[in-house]
Image 1 (cartoon, one colour):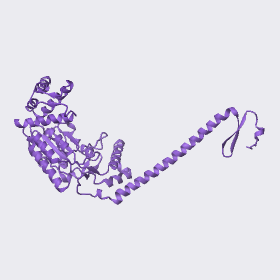
Image 2: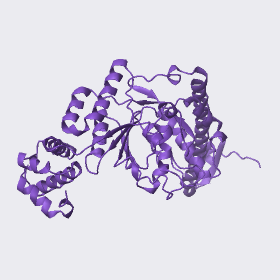
Image 3: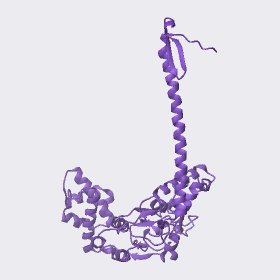
Image 4: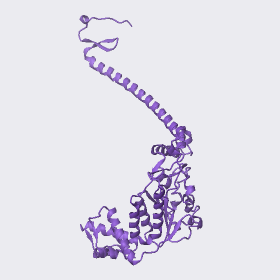
Amino acid sequence: MKSVHISDEDLPAGFERVRFAAGVTLLLPSETVPEVRAEFQRRAEEEESRARDELRKRQEEQQTQAARANLAATLVSEQPPILNRSQPLRGWYCVLPRFAELAKELEDGKAVERSADKDVNQRRRQILQKLLVLGPDRRVAWPKGWRATVNELEAALPHFRAPIRSLRNALALAEATETAPRMTPQLLLGPPGVGKTFFSHRVAELLGSAHASIHFDQPSAGAQLRGSDKYWANSEPGLLFNLLCLGSCANPVILLDEMDKSCGGSGTREVDPLTQLHSALERQTAKCMMDVSVEVEFDASLVAYIGTANSLRGIGLPLVSRMEVHAIEPPEKWESFDIASSIACDVLKRLGLAGQIEFDRTALCLLAHFSPRLMVRAAEQAVAAAVADERNRISEDELWREFAAGTDMQTH
């Protein structure tokens, strides 16, 4: 194709000379110039956009490879002191002692795959990535001014003196040795409604730690602590892994509720749900727990366990030997008033109404005639009724009215 040069004087009528790029000049009808210009501009912008995207992808790939290399070098080669720590330090505790191996496994890619189910492998890969972000250490919950708080707890729950004494001794030893508090697993024996569950909540509040529970009267109790098998499509990590590895606290409080209802040895279940506790309650084996769902080893030796049961029947001597057993009797009448006062204050504080609503002394005396479990329920209903009626005080008559209105309140 031969190019022809036409001077500006010789341009035909209705035509324009348009320059689109270096060395490219076209002679076009005037009415088509805007449309052609727009088309060339669009093509140029698309080409520029593709070039930017390709450049960005190359840079991201280079940054990802560099980050992985740096992470692997830092975790595997340098081995910082925090990964080699054998003793708990007050403030932080290493719950993932094999953290460097997890980083190397994730870098390998294929090592992550532990199941024939792709969804299970993908979930495990996501969990490992989250662990690398969170790091190996978790906060150790430590109560400030714990002596006064423990004394207040003992005054509020005088019939729990024995387990409170064990709690006080553990905190005193931790303070003197500047280590994380280690509580011996507690087993509270007593009739329903004496406040065993309420006590576990108060201990968690005192420590400022996370709190969770396993109810052994439920069919799913057997897999709650250490996860469900990874070969199942609905495999899920257990309670310990979620609290420690995916949580923020190294010493949570776990309530083992209704342990005597586990039906162990009765033949109604193939596996005794209490079996999972044998390694968890032993300090040395708890340092290298393994979640069967994700196959990640972690240290659960700082977890505080509080078990409840009506009797020792069905629990088994090996488990009982790992726990401090305390018989909790119903409080004496003179102790019940202090318990009722503490529960009423706790309910108001939990509902954000402390200082806005008060219980009359006669109402607290009436409340003291019931079990701690019923005290909590009655106090909550009485406060709700006071809010609905726009009252700032709860009297004995009003509390009686709530008892009469609720069918579940008419039994002691």
